[in-house]
Length: 252
Image (cartoon, rainbow, N blue to C red; front, side, top):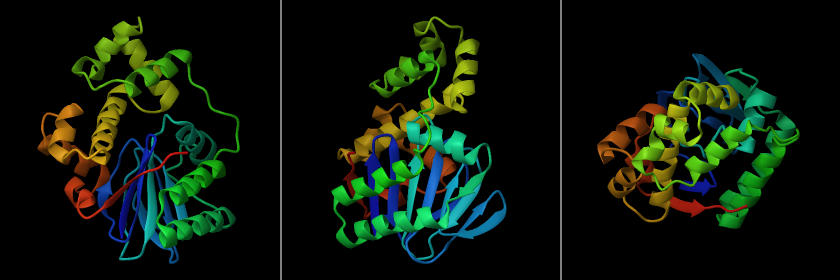
């Protein structure tokens, strides 16, 4: 089983063939077991639990061991990402999700597995967001909010992937913009731009483009450049993930 879904700026999978080597990335990541407890290595610590959130820039590895699990990569600049990072993880490498909340999420997860329809994914993602959305919205500096919208709406023109170009657009120095972005989001602007390019690749793959077309159109030099970067930050081969997978767009 290998369902890959896209929900806004978040991506994830329900799969029994996850094999992620040691890696770290600038995304938050959720893992939820279906029945058996999951085993995950976070910064050298072996953890057994039913659901866990792993902080960004945290070394971890995970193998599903032929058991079905759910995982979701969460963009740290979204409201879900902000809530997870500030209200739950609080700069810790991981957060073990309490049993009562996990049991509720597992019920929705089983419903997705048994029925396999996109609206069931919508209900699952809605409940994940609701589980971590118990605090007032976390707001950014208006300039950063504007910049995030600008990057998200771009067509991956080369200029819009350059910090100096964006700084001129924002009427700020390059160093001032970089400092402000890192302070507000917890991630460097250069790293966020690379994540944006990665998201664009998957958006295009979901729209039916092949890896080579999607990678080059999103600002990578070649498909091999994308493949190398993908392996580095996810611990998994992009081609292995994409092969024999069902792609689902989830709307809320």
